[in-house]
Image (cartoon, rainbow, N blue to C red; front, top):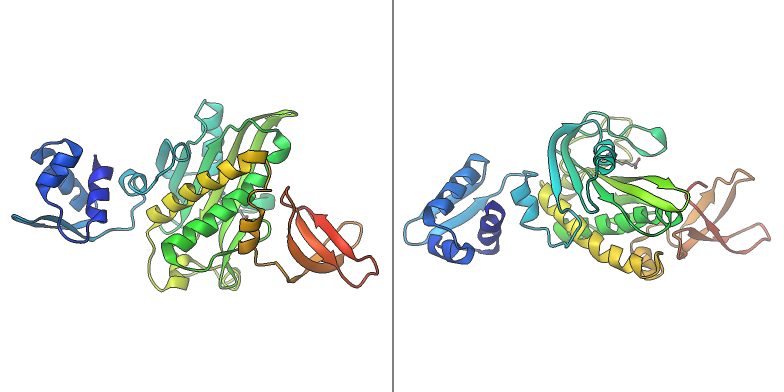
Length: 319
Ligand code: BTN
């Protein structure tokens, strides 16, 4: 009920009468009054005026069920969402939950990660209450070979979610870094448990630098946050909800062929490397070319230059 009341308050520019809330939600005036009291305790500033009703004046940057659920319009992604005050890593937590039987679509969100993980065994700095640390549990039916593409689907969803909430021009640095004004604002770590021909579960972990005010000197040149780029704090709950709203739509398209053929154009529209020179660190020898787009499996298509060996070559992220 809290989520529905918040939604009604947020949708209305002016006042919402207590009577309207009672009628729309089929609840008593006392129940509404109690929820308004709880919201105020959580930090919402709500004006109450006799004969007019309630008006939402200020929303704290809370990652709570009410704030996320009132904006989440998905059928399965984020149902349920489990909110944790702290954990080692939301990916680890999600894996433990998946093994214990958590269903496809369960989302784990934590305020604090004590051992956040990055790609290639690196750690991921996860300061408390300013970032978004979350992992989606998936139990898909396609073969394990297709699972790595979920990372690209997630990258598109983050770019879309960030754009819709902040208006910032978030782009994708292939395969899955989300970049704003040349600096990274998000990393994605997908992990899988599988048999040779069967996926037990996949966890898609997303870390978004939302409201950090500064970064350690060693990453300051490369990383930024949404609030630093925007000049004001963002609602983390809104970003969370919009990322999964977009993810579910893109995932449906992905499922059409269990590859990226239906999403390629959209992905390429966000692709920052497109038309740029890239250097491929192939173990057989480094080579250069111009990135042109991606193929249906998410490999980067590169037009090789200067070797007499011209033509489009596809590389995967290992290279
Ligand atoms: C990268 O190295 O770019 C990937 C970083 C992924 C970080 C996120 S934060 C939520 C989830 N839990 C983790 O421990 N890692 C991912």
